Length: 401
Image 1 (cartoon, rainbow, N blue to C red):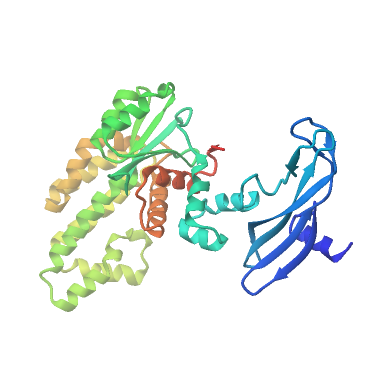
Image 2 (tube, rainbow, N blue to C red; image 1 turned 180 degrees about the horizontal axis):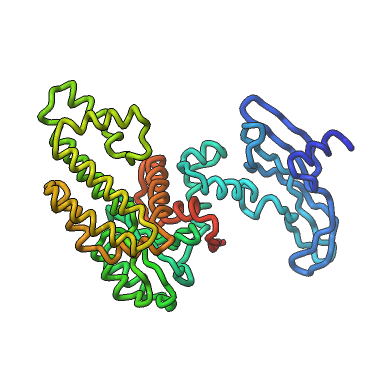
């Protein structure tokens, strides 16, 4: 096989006649023709191999060896021997009126699935940011056809489309995003969810402690069990212990305050997970205050409650925690007790439900990274599209050609 044929095979351009390859320090230039073959006339549909002339066309292709690749394409014009019509040859690599190859466009769409900005993609592929934006607009994610059986709802700070917060709906069971809504107002969420005909098939509604979300669940999802995510419950206990620590350490000497602040993670960790040295350090800190000792024991009792195997055991341990809390009378735990009183039935449901908001919180963290990399999004539609392109590999988009 000739050397140029090997080059064409390497470049995945085996149907061409490669005339020249110019490998410069800054770029690679390919000069080629398509292989001569019979073409069908677009007017009379007769086959012809008669070449009228050649036109030189420049186009961009995917980078190779870390360098931009440019085409010098000697494009044939055929002449129909039956009706005299002149027409250009067909080219599977380059659409009509385009100066960017199909495979460069596909590479651009693949790059948009990564957590990087459009500017970075444009620089890497040697195209303009407007071109990246234009290709991104071709991919559209419409409304999903139905709701999943397990639905999770949360909000995140997106600052896109004129609203500070956006609402996210996910399926914890399928590990996928259902949709992104432009704001978190209950009216908008209600209007969106009302349009689904399979609302009665939702069996679990997972959320944080948001009264508006609870009203939506009770209004639209009659067969769903409302579940409060455990993460949002347990942090009330850690907040209370942290507030006690901060109050206690204010009365200490500067060196002791620094020690308490540096050792805060020891107080928040499970006692059973601490090494012997760390247990001694915790015992030393607890000697400074009766309230800190009581708060630490309450935290351990709360962790024990959260480790319950089912809702029956959880209800028993929750009663014990409340007794300890009322006896200790630590003001910082009042908010925790109020939260438990208001949301107890839905918190206990979490111990019988195998799903949580963990996937949703992970998605929210990734969205924050994407937003930071892009220095924010002004357009909500672009923001939503990038989120679904990057984080929803199972969602099939609709291509607007």
